[in-house]
Length: 635
Image 1: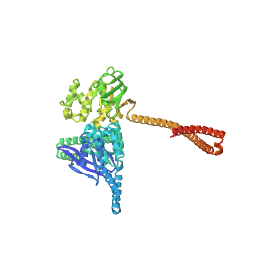
Image 2: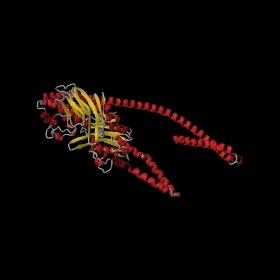
Image 3: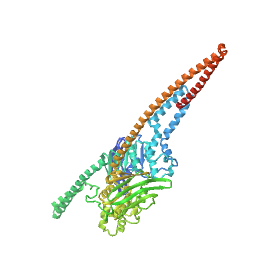
Image 4: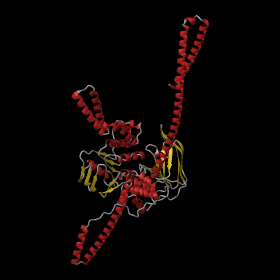
């Protein structure tokens, strides 16, 4: 056991946030914490790290355990570069390395006891660095930088030049590199693109430590956790398995709990009717029996109604008129800002009734593409046009269409004055605004609540083409499921940007992947996209291996030819050198003979030898020239 929570209670004023929360975590547990917005998930993490105190209960943490905490709003204020900031995590190791270099210098001139002392210190430091994987810290930093979506050039960018989201990613990177025994992550996938989320999933799965994750990203939870802590009505329940396993078990538990609740309510009503009947007799014996039954009811342990929408609550809102078959045509679109190219050669079309997800890395220009489609941003090249009868409903992440001074109800009723109050309430109820909640001011709402109001407005419009930019941001799990069901029954056309892979899986019939050089189309949901992309990758690798193999065969043949040619040249050089030696020996012999009296006194003999020497000398010059040329060709 590395962490234990025992009956944690926490209230803010009269509002009870947490009541009787308990959890036991082992050293390598990966635990997801789920619940509706405001359930107290972030509050629980703050209690664990000691930032908040609990009203009751206890938090027990194993001795010498380091805890790392990543909050939703964490940022770094620094003048260092990204690389330098991440490097600060390893300052103790860098200090040890410097000491090692100092010891090495001292060992050169040391002897005796001093040398032994230095060697012992050197061995101890080396072991400590090895234990902390200290010799790999530079590659670890580079891996985290790349994994979190920064390229090599950006790693030298200064922190104070970064956006808020980029600073948050750097803070997450620092925490991961510090490798605490317990890692608390509050919405870690915010500000990450899909590639970075996949990297973080792999990182957490292989993390040697306990990880507690608060997240609304169901796909992320599916890939990382093996246990779910659910917080509902202030109480906790632990489920073994990932998010999907939890959701299945939760549905069964809800059904059982609902039956218990209904049965108990039925029994309570029956007892109350009996009590009233007994009292109506107005006899002492009947009144005592009624009082006895009242005491029994008071002692009864009440079953809470499960938090769930009514079974008949379904959001099915469809456009009043259909568009033409061609909803959107995009041809050879290109866009740059100053000297930075976002994308080019972007071509695709969308047909009536399609549900299409637009994905791609952060900064590739997905929102810019939406703004071009909506005629809110100019394009550089290409063509973008809507089909006949298309009416667009646009969901903006910033909720710029909402009036902060109005109530939720007035925001809807003023926008759609022909709707009856009952119709407005039904739609708002589908987005989890019931009772007096509908009279809350827009200015008092959370980001998730504003998102639900914006979605309700769009779904009520006459739009037959919904363009949604990150519609699930800030929505809790229940709200995401409501939106998924709404889009599943929507008969119009939908194009949306989302990093929520679970949402994409549940709603997309087609995925368009935006790249700097154009788009890739995948006709299926997110799992199909992953499968197809992996298949394409394998085919590319096989093709490359085949090319490499062919190149290898060609290289081998070429190498054989080169080796044969080299041997041929070397043989020729050997023959030339032998011939040169023979010629030089003959010339030496002639010179010796020309010095003999019987030769140099014989004019005819001398002339013959001298002519032979000239022939040999001419041949020797030719041999040396050929030797030099051939030798240069293999040097």
